Length: 157
Image (cartoon, rainbow, N blue to C red):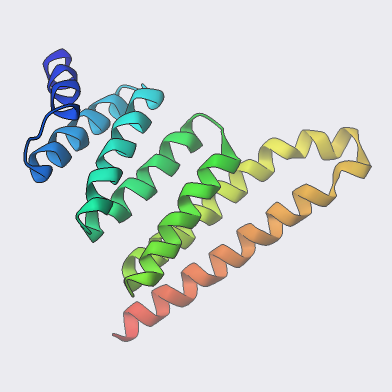
């Protein structure tokens, strides 16, 4: 792991081949994520995303948006997670990738649902705080419905 992180820092300031950089950043991000080092994983996913966007590598772009969102989700930073999952959704729709669009809706539905569970305590203690949780609940249901619609579309293809 230490060597992998050293490689990632070395390539960051080098003129190496972009694909090699992406592979190293990806490995470093995944290693950090698997160990629960989400801040480090986010750092490497963002570096990977920059390289992928510069070279229009769609699969890498989609992957980075999704898993950056998953890292923020694991940190219970739901609004930032939502932002990255919405970027994942937008990119998947832009690329007309139905499978990834469905995955993005599922990620959003899950994020919203867990976020809502964290807000339940606020609702129980302050009835005037229920507007935001109701909005999160609606977003979760909308995302889940859209996910199901995409699954049906994929089944018909």
